[in-house]
Length: 292
Image 1: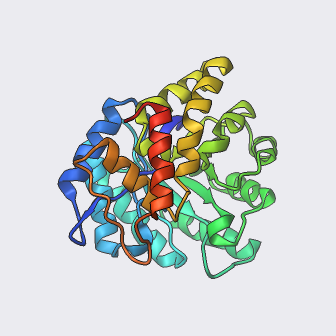
Image 2 (image 1 turned 90 degrees about the vertical axis):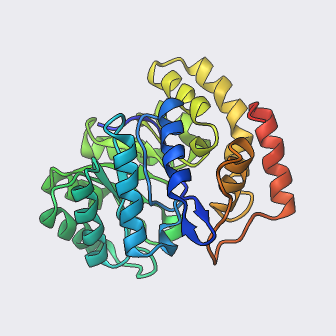
């Protein structure tokens, strides 16, 4: 299914609009540097402040520019189930390989509501779904029994981006859903442990900035070269940490603009640029990683 280093792509903005030229360049660079798939329009892509038209256009650009070289896992989440379905239809029409669908945020649904949300989508669109569990942002946490129920009933629910930070969930989800259930870390800093426990990769923030290093790290994990993976983990850890030194994606956009001056660091309100202290932390992390 999906594995390796999968950047949760930023969306470049310039003067308030999506910078399509910069985004296409970012897609090409990510593929050239070894990223194994791409995931546009997630949290890091600022999907929460894009219009539906912008969102669907960014997904379409990503698919078009990737041109089949790597899979595209399109962000399709919403706290409105009907809007999530619209995003899935648009992503499928664009040629995306899967939909990344977050647990509904703000509404705080119970487990039955979470189940019904994903069941509604799976019944109406056959695009493969990667569940996205990030309770730090959504408050709601999809439980392992609910994941099992969905996987048992719908063949198109094929994996999860797990951003709980609870490594034991990897084992619990594998035992419940089987070894073929694709488990991707949603946290760079714990991806080493996640992979050691049975995960197959990471939908990564840091890969926006350090795609080659993140790809090498994931390759080492996939080959069982844990010594090399640990070496790369130590080199990358300050960067992983710095990406959340202020509200994301401010730090990652600033870091990317340092590595790639052609990439704008503009964010949309209510996100603001990272503070001076955060920038100093990011600058130091880039130096440690050997990126500047």
